[in-house]
Length: 632
Image (cartoon, rainbow, N blue to C red; front, side, top):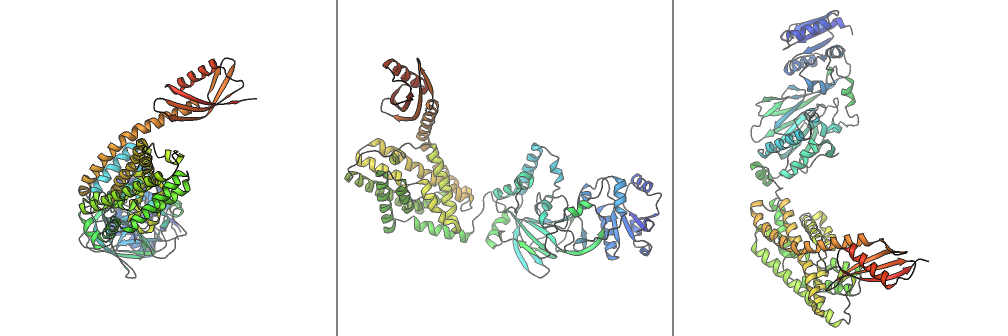
């Protein structure tokens, strides 16, 4: 193409900048026209257009070029940074003019909103920060990003859902409840285009629509972190977003929503989006085509099944976005009905619990972990405990009392069964499995709370209800009560109290964590749940006091064992090495059991020095029980 056939259309451009352009092109035969003369010239005399001006002026020339099948180039103004990024236009004027003056045979799609060309995106409603420019974040530091996160979160706190219907070119209707949507055609440097970069191609005849529909502030914060922190970006869309790809979309809303086309507000009631496939031959940079995903297929697609679309959710979210997810009435009714049944004391519950107790008690006596695990799987005690947590959460006194009675009766049956077996079993030796349940610590409370959260989550989701078996093994409710029953049978108060404290730890941890999980899943508003949760939080703190002392003791013992294990102690000419350290608490003194490796038999004075050094390393008076091994 000869450059003499170029028509240069300029709009709102500073005279100095326009003169600079003329200077670069003064040796070439380029005809300059103000944009208002676009329809007055004979375009047959030109084979290529170049335009410089505001976005609206650029769109005017693009529209004309599209209608007349003319190629067109854009010379961006210095402040049009986003336009440069979208079409990979050079920022240096000389290079920008060279690119703009080069006619391209490759054509790109044009997206139109109500027949107006869209260069960046269309935003219907509110969609922060999908409509924001990603480059504004990349140059910011940590605290600036944190500030943006906070301000965006505050902005979202004022948003609410609206009912929308999206109808594609085949009249397929999708009804959703959403805060807002963003439609785009190109990689324009926004957060939205980054999230769906793998689905964008500028010449496939399809537009992309992102739907922002968070059902809770917690869900939105997760999406926001993925958006604002590139390292946290996922390959899949966040749960608060939906996606539609189509050639045309009609957006119908129950109320008039703000519509922004390339940043300009349009008071539109009906929004019609469509794509003119390969509608214009635009001079773009090489990087523009490098960003296109050649593997994108030309078919329509939608990912909206997870978005709220029922009337109940829409009505609830229309008021405001709750902090936690709101469970639907149908989902809540199904779970609540199930928990009411599981809270009741039945003959099946009693029989299973007694059988589980017998298995657990015999497993404790024979010191078999596998037998005890079998008892954990059989025991149904988790069911009324989870029901109790829902009663606490919803302040449902009937459910609370029913579940509490079932738990109390069940615990009594376990204690009685284990006590009777201990009476009639001619064994009074504390096994390792029994001893392992006599020193509960804060770690046991942590295990109980995690197990309670897992149990509540599994109960609320029928697809993973089978995971309750794993929860039952993790928290082990029946074995500590069985050990307490054995302590009653032997008449040893220490065994009963320590083992029963472990059960209480499990009970409190499960109830508190399950209640909090149900709140998180939307089965109760916070103002209803806070009283019950506060009460059980106080109970958990009271339980944590003796557990903390046990945890301190465990930590101290671990430090002593670490200090003594493989310790070399000089005893005159000989040297002793300690191994296999075991600490046993006796009524009056701590007992250190260990192996001592030496070359020679130790005399009484050397043994005294050995004991003193072990006591010094332990930091307390100890009784030493040593097994001697000799190095030959």
